[in-house]
Image 1 (cartoon, rainbow, N blue to C red):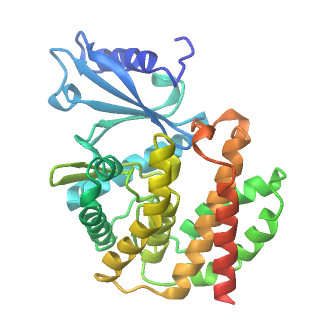
Image 2: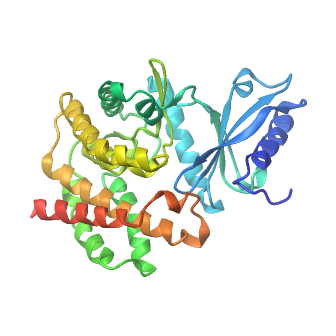
Image 3: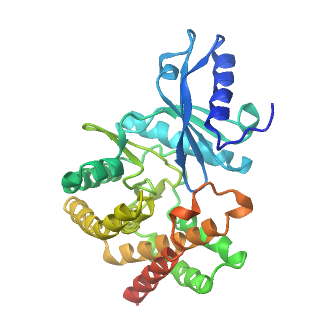
Length: 342
C-alpha cells in the first residue's frame, strides 16, 4: 500500500472503500465524493458515504473517518473509542463508533470510523439564528450538566484524580522543554503547584473540550463528538474549559465582520452559560480558578505550538485562524487566576 495523504479526502475515501470491501466481502463504492470536514488541532477528519450490497446498515449511513497524526497515538484512538462506546448505552448522545484501525490496516495512521451525526454544530446554529443564542447556550449547559450527572461505574479510561491535571500540563511542559516562549516556564511551575486544589472534589465524567463546535444538533437531538480529552475529574475542570473557549470563539469566525461580532458576543455567552450551569450545580470558586489557570496555560502552549508548525509538523490546524496575540490574552488569564488564588 502506498503512502496516503491524510489531508486528501479522495485518498481517505478510497482507502475506506478497500477496508469495507475486504471486511464485508463484496463490492463497495463511494456513494458521493468524500469530503474534508476540517481539522482538529492535530487530526484529519473526513466525511465518507459508502454503498454496496453486502454493507451492514450502519456502514451505508454517512460516516466520519478521523485520522490521528502519528502512529504512536494508537492507544489514544482505542481509548476514545471505548469512551464513546461507554457513553452510548448510558443514554448519553454520541456517534456510534464502528471501527478502530491500526496504522498498517489502511491509512498509515491510527484511524477511527464512526457514524456521522446528522445536523450541524451548535456554533453553526448560533451563527444562523443569533436570536436563539440564549436558548442554545442554555441547552448546551444542560447537556453538560447531564454528562456530569452520569454514574462513573465502569469508566474505561483513567480514574486517577490527577490524570486530567497531568493531561493539561503535558503540552506546556513539552513546549518548555523545547525552549518555549518567555514566561511560560514560570507559569507552568506556578500552575503545577495548584494540583492539590484542582484535583479535589467529586469525580464526574468530563468531556475535556465541551464547546459549540463539538456538539452537533439536529432539531431537538444532539450528539457530542471529539472525546480526545475525556476523563474523570471535578466538574470545575470541564466547565472552566468551556467558559474559556467561549471567550476565544472568534478564532473560528468566517471573515472580519463575523470575527468582530463573536469577539463581542463570546464573553456574554460565557457569562450566560455559567449562570445556566450553576442554576443546576454548585461550584467551588477556588477550584474554578485553578482550572482556569490550567486551561489557559495549556491554550498558551497550543498557540505557540501551532505557530511553530507543531511537533515534527504533526499539527493539522490552520495557524492563520489563530492570531499570535491570543497567547497574550491567555497569559493574562493565567496571571489573573494565580493572583486571585493568592
